[in-house]
Image (tube, rainbow, N blue to C red; front, top):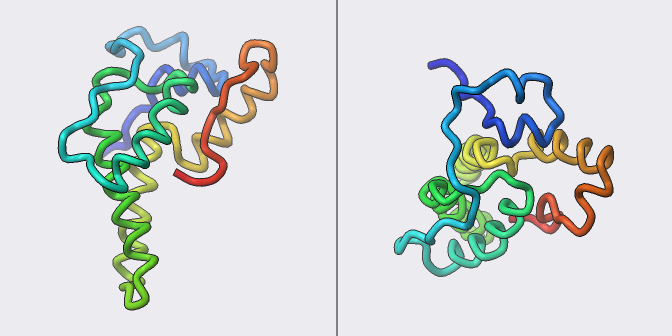
Length: 138
């Protein structure tokens, strides 16, 4: 399976020359999507903390609800797992890898943050007051 293409919004935020060359990507309306009903408890808290930051970054749209929901659900499961004194390290590693893949699609992975951080430094006037990501963790 080929790797997924990086969304235009993330390419633009990174200052990629490829952002302007791709005109075939459908554009969804920016906004915080409705939280799926299965996003509850700690997952809901992760949603509430992360969704506004992704919107400020310009990478969250109204159709991203289930993708963000899965990320928040697995983040809550990961936190619960690593706080369990009898946690399974192999399961934690697999869950961490899954979170990394989901986060990459949302623009919250370490690589995505590094690319966005360079742009924020280059364009401080355009990004004044914006919080590109949660430095305290998702």
